[in-house]
Every structure is written in C-alpha cells, then in structure tokens.
Image 1 (cartoon, rainbow, N blue to C red):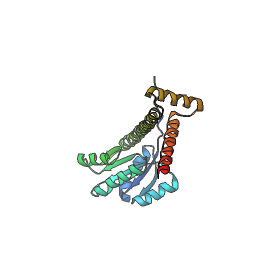
Image 2: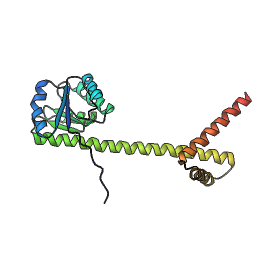
Image 3: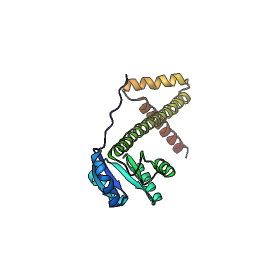
Amino acid sequence: MGHQAQVSLSKTVCFLGCESVDCESIASDVVAAGFRISGTFNDAQSFETFIARSGANPVVVIIVDDRTENQLGQIGKICARHVFPVLALLKSCNETLAIRALEAGAQSILVRPANSEAIYSALMTAILQRARQSKLEAEIDGLKNKLAERKLIDRAKGILMSSMNISEVEAFRLMQRQSQEQSRPMVDIAKAIISTSELLERAGRLQKA
C-alpha cells in the first residue's frame, strides 16, 4: 500500500472584510469547533501587515454579501499571494454566488447560520482542498521543469549531431557518459554544450565583423 502525505493542519482562523457583529456571531462556534481566532480585519492591507509580521498560516474566512465584487476580488488576491485555505461565508443560500466564490479561489463554502459541527466541516474541507491544490501545483511545476530539461537535452543533442556528424543515439550516449564521468546531471551537461556552442557562434561573428 502507498503512503499518504501528511497534511499540516492550520488551526487558526482570520476573518477578513467583515463587520464586528458578523465576526462575533460566528466566533464562539469557530472556537467550539477547535480553532483559534488569530485576528479580524476590515481591509486587506491590515491583514497583509499582520501576516507579514506574524508569519501566520491561517484559514481565511471572508463573508460574501452585498459587496460581492470587492470580496470576490479579495479571495482572488489572497489565493494568488498565499497558500492559505479560504472559506467563503455566505449570508444566504445563493448558488450563483457560491459558484463565483469557488471560481475566485475559495476552497470551501458555508452558509449562515451554522453550528460548530458545520463550521468544523467547512474549515477542514478548506484545509484539505488547499493541501490537494498545493500538491497538484507542485506536481505540475515538476512536470514543467522536466519538460524544460528535456528541451535543453534535445537541443544539446542536436548541436552534437550537427557538429560531430553523429546519430541521435550516439549524441545521447556521449552526453550520458559525460554525465556519469563528471557526476553531474544530464541537464547540466546539456547547458554546458549549449553555452559552448553559443560562445563559439559569437566568436565566429566577431571574427567576420
């Protein structure tokens, strides 16, 4: 059986863009759900200042109401700048608004009023969804890096094939042998070949000038 990656649970919550009465009405249930409230903020700037100073990694709860565009924009900015789980707290059942909040980047939706059990479920869903997204993003970055390395290796093979009049297999084996003898990754050998080729090309152009 494969081993599942352990998820680092953030047990702190920040409220963003909500009035004090909104926060007070749900704060006790958040605490009852086993979470600690680390701050409430009326604007994004004060929130960002707090994060920069504290290094906190909270679940961010944003109340989405009649100021929809501003709050959806805040969700998008937080998801672009940080890896925090985001819970969109709706004041009523509104499917269109819920979909828009999710499209903006929220990992979970909760409709008020809600008890501590529902709050716990929504917060945990946000945390786990954010963890899955982070893992997927890391895998995509890894694939992009591998593709970039493959392109460099292919380019280096082409240089060797052209300059030494050898086959693709021979070029690959030559690079592979250099990689083994020098204990360096194949992509580093490819970069060295490309750099040398570009240097020779520049030197040739200077001689002709």
